[in-house]
Amino acid sequence: MNKNRCKTCAPNRGRKKKKKNCHSSSNIGLVMLLLGLVTVLSFILPLKCWVIILGFAVIICGILLIKK
Image 1 (cartoon, rainbow, N blue to C red):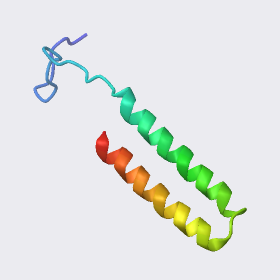
Image 2: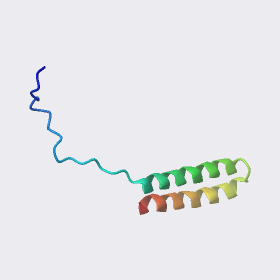
Image 3: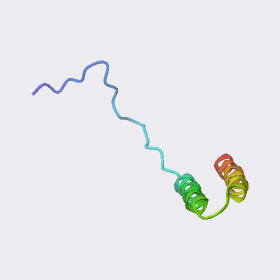
Image 4: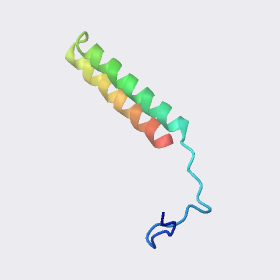
């Protein structure tokens, strides 16, 4: 077997894997849960209430995603 490395492949010395941030995935999960709830309520509530709730949901989702 040829144990020589090609020149384009860099050795894996000194490189550390980045840790995943669990907080960001919980924010995205919360956003998806909130949008799912708004979607389900859209079939029950009248149009004016749904538009108001959707507006608040978008604002809250934006704040949660900016904070991360």
